[in-house]
Length: 60
Image 1 (cartoon, rainbow, N blue to C red):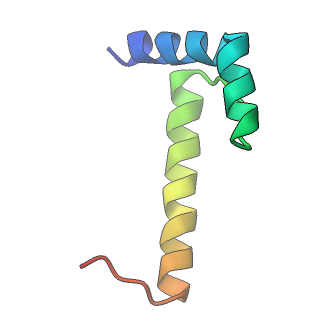
Image 2: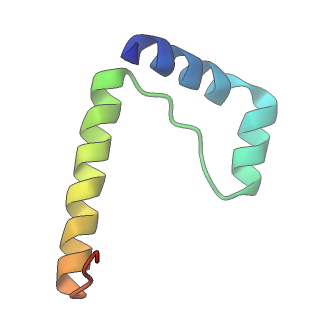
């Protein structure tokens, strides 16, 4: 299932119209294989946890 979702996501990111839309929103398409995307998400979650802890933000 993960491979299917990744392939569909990467296909969408390769669409020129969608790429223009993302650029208009200030985003840059960055297709990744599933393992690299998982690593990216883990790093982002860790970074945001550190930011939240430093700002003393809690999820209630």
